[in-house]
Length: 316
Image (cartoon, rainbow, N blue to C red):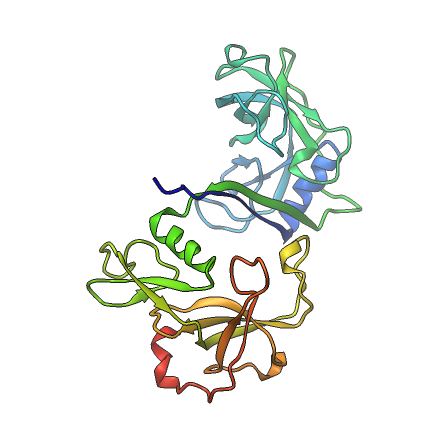
């Protein structure tokens, strides 16, 4: 039985967002241990606040403070917290309607177990010790059996507002390539590129997926393509990749879609061996391998005349 290929993969990037006046006031308020909502024209108070009424689409900005105490409207128990979640021990994800609000806020609820949580239970905010102007300034909610807190009537005016946030998005998963892509990867180890031909439309897909994305029928016929190909489209990269060891490449450089000879689909690769401002559509290229590599390091010009546009226009 052939070995089943698998590999851990991580997709990670920082997402930077600037804030409008409503979200800016909300996050700045959390930094100051104040929870702000926004009041609609029909008198509803929305927490977390939004800048447009979800019912009427009307722009809204009338900020109003609500209490740090509230009621659980629904919840789900998290048996195994993951990296980056609010608590390191099992907790409940809960929707909490804060006193004075008409909508619920999603956050973690610290409780000893699922038997200690129920819809309708009273909770209060546990503030983080170090607050920076983010939703994590609320460390979590905790059970509370006291009276509803009274807000101070804060207007949402602050001297030093938070104007932007950076969210670090990350996805960890294990990838198994399947039959078609396993054959593709095995061929790359021999410095060959293989695709699979659709029995209906006769296109050769590289990398193969095991089925034709156009016709929806299984593919099985393997076809070796390349190694040479044609640049169909490209972009010039001017921003150096950060925190990515295998992309430690000096900028600017060119990343291109390359239609390998015999393929019905362009794949992507870096172009080298030519000044970035001389790369062009139709440029004929070939792969350059490095010792021990599992795929070409980059593609370089072959010296052939450029391909005619009609030869690759269907692959753009």
